[in-house]
Image (cartoon, rainbow, N blue to C red; front, side, top):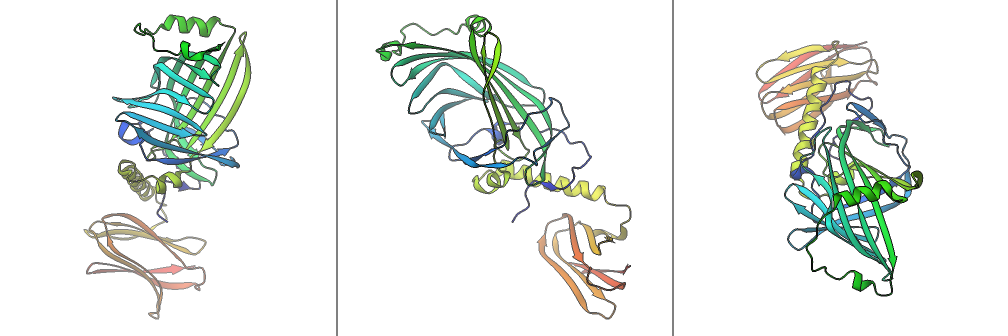
Amino acid sequence: MRALLFLAGSILTLSLHAQTLSTTSNMPRSGDQLIKHVVTTCEPGDMSSEQIWDFSNLKLKNASYQLKYTMQGSDSLVAIEHRTMYYHSISGDSLFCLGYENPTTLITYQKPELLLTFPILQNQKISDYFDGKGRYCEHMYIRQRGKSIITADASGDLILPEGDTLHKVLRIHTHKQIHQSIILKDNVSTLLKVDTLPYTLNCDSIEYLLTNDSIHQEIETWRWYAYGYRYPVVETIKSTVYQDSKPYEHFSTSFIYLPEEQYYDLPYDTDNQKKRDMATEEQLERKWKNMDKSLEKGTNDDTINYNYRIENNSDLYINYELKQSGNVTVSLFNLQGQKLATIQHTSLSAGLYNETISMDSYPTGEYLLRITTGEKVYAKKLFKK
């Protein structure tokens, strides 16, 4: 299995900069399918940089939903999940919701709802209004208006349920305030007919309704985006109904989009693949620069720079920087010339690498480490205590 963009175990103390969400890396794509796994509700936590979100205790529930994106026409993207179709429009660097429908409800926005505007950086904040109308079960007329505030409010590292850690995570918080009016009518279609007058958005009216009407709904959504992945890896949604200014929790739920499923199941996501490869190289470079000082020096020339050590658990660790591409063979011998272990690589690119050879079953004494690359052979005598 190819290495994912994870670092298992403890989190590196080195502070990492948050990523920036972009159109090429994070805009939804037609043909993509994701599985939203329901998990125990996770609290969003504080708003700031250098956060550590420990979601290692999240439990996957026995429920999941498929999210599928498909094109409709030249500029309309449909997101299908949980028996509902959400109609999206991509306009420049922004993603809008044009409306949605399911077996009981149809909503069409005269002023579409803003979902995302790229690029998105830490602490960036944008707000916009939406206004729509529709029907419920053919017998009720619905008018839905409101305001969305989108903020990149936090960044840091995220620990997944299996214990792996994702770095350069940016959290997007969407606070959606909704005022909805419902009118019972015998003939809803007459209320939904096309208006001959041009539509004008009345922001003051929406603000007044949200502030002064006796009831409105607020939906808060937190999405955690990891570097090198197009879609969020964790999502929490909380819905609250305010009646006479008193909050009443409507529902709360959380999902996880498993990174390995995004890694393997999304086709031709070359932009994010490059980011994952770069992040892997950065991790190796940090590991190289922060190596234990107890490492024994090997050789440093124009072909290779290598170091090694034997840990207390009798594992032999070899770290090396290959300065020219080529074949590499790492071998361990006893002093009688018997080959005990060998690791071979063909056509390695120049870069940083590490190998581990278990010496647990070998007795105390001297051994010979041999590294061959191209026409050159390097040998070091080492001692196992």
